[in-house]
Length: 300
Image (cartoon, rainbow, N blue to C red; front, side, top):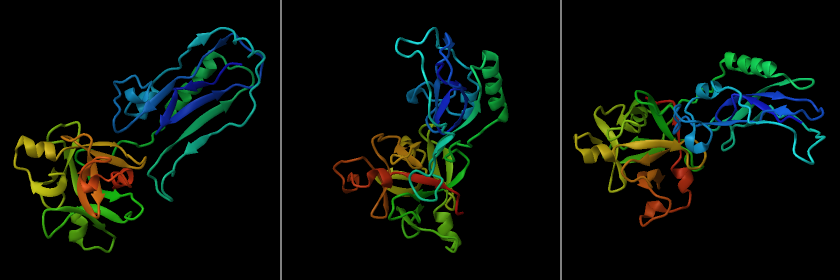
């Protein structure tokens, strides 16, 4: 039997895909194998091939632009003819995998057409064109984009009501609760303006929304809010590269000048920490969760 032919590939993780299903019929000599396309809105690039996680595309639009690819034309191998396909069709999977009633994860859904007999190449192409024309979009562009305002919400089970913010009593950065009834100042303290990375424009820096010119930076591995002094050292200390959350939820913010370390909350204080190390805050327990953040709607 001819395998599934997948329109625009199977766009794994954060995208939709088009699928044409064939009914149970005798073997045919001409068939196309599937092509998988990977999309990673944080680390991908639309100049990549998209055929592996390491070469992921950045947008679903780039994945959908791909055409159907025939990888084989010939008879089924020995022992596979006749072949019978039995079972159900799964039209969706994933989503809400990590926390109850949160939209921190995404699944894959499929748009399919059940046909009688083997569809012609023209039919396959028409279904693919129809799916592409529908303009599906997952709106997965990272909210950690220069110019945007965000509040960084902790994802560890102890602290899901806490947000990364600067302490008004000093220059340290901590996590603390913020709610709709919190004072305006507290909401501003927990709001950041995303800027192009001071040391590398492909990464980001976080400027305080209510303390203009002051940035989140690490010093001796602890997080502080300090004014940009224009030095290359400050620029490196204040630059972080968004990655897929280490726990599978949200985003993790990798230190530009210490790539093994990520922004972490530990005992309600902000640090950059590695997964195991000589510092107390490098403890491996809860590291993946403590270094994963939701890019929430800005409080201020």
